[in-house]
Length: 412
Image (cartoon, rainbow, N blue to C red; front, side, top):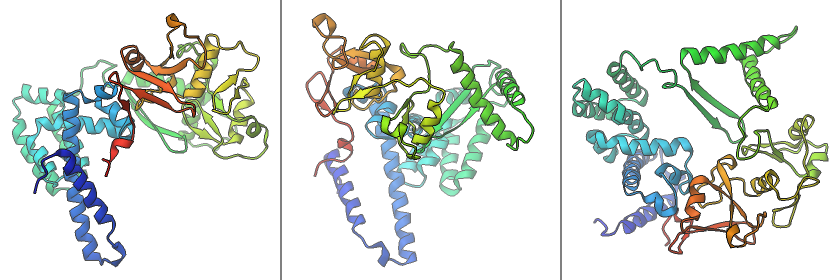
């Protein structure tokens, strides 16, 4: 029997999942486990399909605005704790499936996975829909055929079919605008290391190769046993070193771009390795030994912290003025403090909690780090406030508080 209220249906679903968790899986035999897996995979697919529809409807209804956010992707990152990639994929899938009813129906029936739906969703993106229309391609036939292929074929085979269709849709490739196809994607891993991929046009690629090759060849020496890929990786980092050291890069919110490391004085002076002790400006955590290595060629600034973790003193530098105040607020807040946001420091302004026109001081205690969007929101009715324990809280104009994470499961 269907529930009359959406909240009841979600509550019943969560209760059913709790019941499943109580089952003793160790007592089940292989055939029983396989049967349960089939059922769970179908249920997972159905739930993912409903999630994509809800995300799309939330986008159409501008639901993120209720919590002070601009897009569904930002809401999913902040409130749903999704990665950038997963949030964007979910939003794109919800949008594209509107153009692909057969695939959407197969997804809702549980016969195709979220990953397959995301692959097929490329066909429903506006540019590809327009290209299909211009070539009199019957998108309905393509939609129906792909729903069948997705239900019967492996993920890899489906991806090949989709890519084949897209290639035939645009056999000549994009127009030769060098900026059209340029992409750089950086993924940060749990240990702070990064990996990525990039796509460049021929001329842009030539520039990058010329710069890297110049550094690589200048660094060659006898006995160098690094592989070619290692040499290029080192040259890439050296290219960044040279740009940072040159001092000509654009300023990030009143501060020149630099490698920032935060570490306690005791850890800095202790000769022990000290794993996971220091924090870099972009959030990566490194060992004390690595921080000491960086400090060999760096300026060290003393920052005295109070019992609540807020900076009290910036050493011999001028106190609470201009970039010095900015450094203190960056250190304390670490990013936009608006609930569910977390935009990095270099996207943020320093906001006066009590406006200076109303007598508010330009001080650390009266400052909050807010991205441009949420700085505007706070000046139009939203409110942020720092608690005595250092936590930030956010309220809507109607006085209700925006809570992050707590709403992922309805109250019992």
